[in-house]
Length: 112
Length: 112
DNA sequence: CCTTGGTTACTTGCAATGCAAGGAACTGAT
DNA sequence: ATCAGTTCCTTGCATTGCAAGTAACCAAGG
Image (cartoon, rainbow over all chains, first blue to last red; front, top):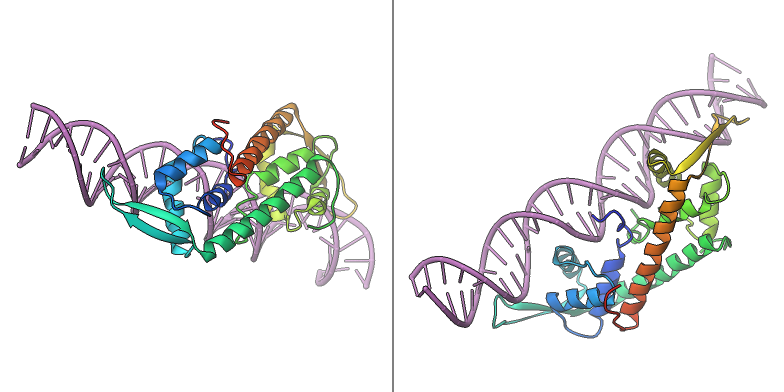
């Protein structure tokens, strides 16, 4: 793993969920959008295990469509469970951001 | 681990570094400040391995002082290497925040 | 054919960190 | 001596990121 990026833990999943909130996307599209948003090293080695995990947890509606160039593409979109997971992520992300802001501004907050 | 908190990965370390930027603190003080800033479940089981790791990497100036109640307390403060690690963390944190903001606002950024 | 190359999907295995749980050393008080 | 409180450390598991490798499917060329 890059020397840094324990920081990505959990975050990548949250972002992929967000990307699949509205549209059906397949792997290459997800990778490209993640990269364009700033996750420039985001790779399929990260994506596929994540998709399988989330699919197993019922987070997706999945549609297979034949491809002219290879095996059928798997398109993903959030299910209701997926949306809930996204909502949970977003709340936790906001709490985390606030806590870090507290630490870095030397304010104390008392519980959060 | 809590079902959520892969999100904390890397973040807790960055925050502890920040707390030790100015003052000498020992374990219980670090735990309390982290909790007050919003990391309400922050525990010694997390802290001690982290301190040892960072100490081994030369991130600290360490001072032992006798305690009236038990074994000598270990006080920690950032070394120059520690400060550099903190700076690196802060930059990475900002980049990460920006990327997430991009994903959640559906803006694309092109590289970052 | 059948090989090559591109596309899409998946698997395996390792590294890093959080954290629960338990243990060890030291103190003063009962 | 024992006990409780304090302070420190160790062990082991779970999760996730990611590199690397595998496999299935297709089209086009030799």
